[in-house]
Image (cartoon, rainbow, N blue to C red; front, top):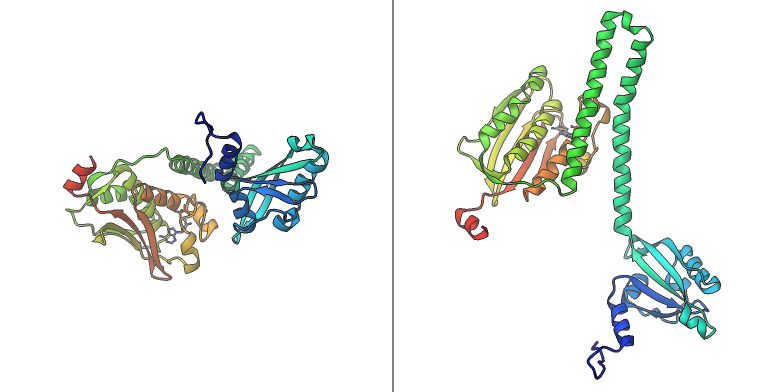
Length: 364
Ligand code: ADP
């Protein structure tokens, strides 16, 4: 639609306004005093009627939510301006809108009151808010369990338990273990928050993979020894990958730590390397109990565990794999898992193959 221009080159204000209302993302409708739609913009037609014309239809026919009728009704009858949260099913998706309804005063002058309704899509905000609330409630729940345990044991010691030296030592160990759990959880929560807020950047460089794997394992040997788990680093010594070495080590430690925790007593953890389809794949395999198929699609979600009690008992936070997923993505890579019950699981981190010297020069 072309805009008419005045002789002096300025746009006619009415057409300018019309063009503006037509182009905005928010749905706008004007309803007359009989409750019929008088005018609408394309966004409102798309939202309320899949793009069909809605002019002269009754408001009840085009919006099902009663709260929307009440809001527009109050603007028409009492001249009230309101903001109301309403839900509209748009193409099988339940979307949430903030409906601002207001009387149109210019129409009032002529003795007729119309109402304007503006639909702001707040679905994304609502979903983010829900995720935030769930996260907070998960964190609070996870912190409450060890904290309750600490308080119980402190009370027992306070109530005369100190006299029994053997018991006191045992209680102190429990208190320490739970305090460590809280510490670990807070570290993981902070780490994940930083990553999700986009505050963590990776600086990929060509690094030797095999020594990095050895280093990651050496920080876990005590844990492995306790369960009699052995280790095989099958990564060829000459292998280089293009990654941020600190972050890749963090990925490896999280995966290898799980491979120890969820392995069977005396099991083995194998780290292997393979290149295919333009990607570099690092496999971390264990021969533990494996993960049931139904859990696999959700295993990388934060706080998702196949067995919460067991995870907590093993000192887990339920955040390790979520951190791995984000760190792999920051490298433009991904993490996947294959698992067989009774045989074990293999987690694979796939990174884009190292850029060639010419590509590096081009992008520099
Ligand atoms: P956690 O702190 O519980 O280890 P993660 O996010 O690292 O949290 O892992 C989430 C869940 O995935 C674990 O609680 C466990 O149920 C499952 N899981 C992770 N790695 C393995 C594995 N190697 N074998 C079996 N289950 C695993």
